[in-house]
Length: 105
Image (cartoon, rainbow, N blue to C red; front, side, top):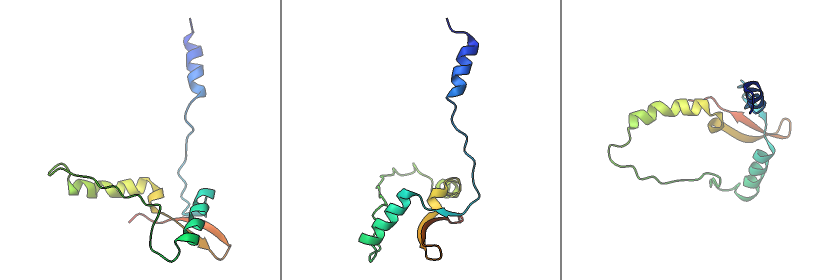
């Protein structure tokens, strides 16, 4: 019915794009980051309320979770996902809202 070459050629077309990791620690904030920053400045500037954080309560059964394991996993998780260390702030030197990736500590 279909030749093997045709099937392989068809699957090569839909490969995932490869991403490279940049060593940059700052950049202009994306449109969405700028919008969220501006919204927080307009409506929540005078409070410490963080409206975009979502808290979830979990019930953990006794002895089902190892604190030591969590402590060993968290640094790796934070290192692999730079968004967890990213802050957005206004840079008055160039009048732009920028994102900064802090070093994982």
